[in-house]
Length: 77
Image 1 (tube, rainbow, N blue to C red):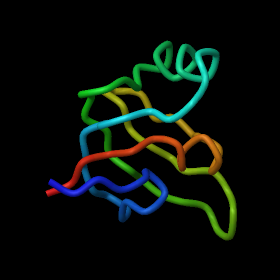
Image 2 (cartoon, rainbow, N blue to C red):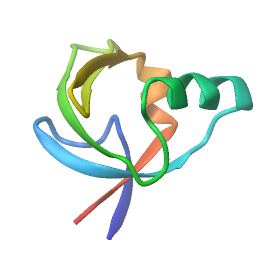
Image 3 (spheres, helix red, strand yellow):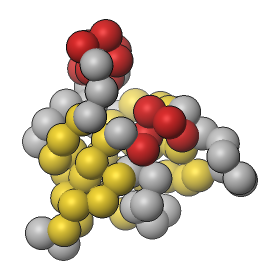
């Protein structure tokens, strides 16, 4: 499997979270949103230029800032 950042993942594609390269506070924030290692997420859309990235985690739809999304590494087939 190939590892890429969430920003690089194409829209409407599923992937599994492989790593989160952040500090403890941001990692705790992502954990509270349901994003953790091994979790399957779907990238819904990415807003123009350097905007937010919308993802679906379980039944919830979340918007992550581009900086935070770039620190989430996912595995794709």
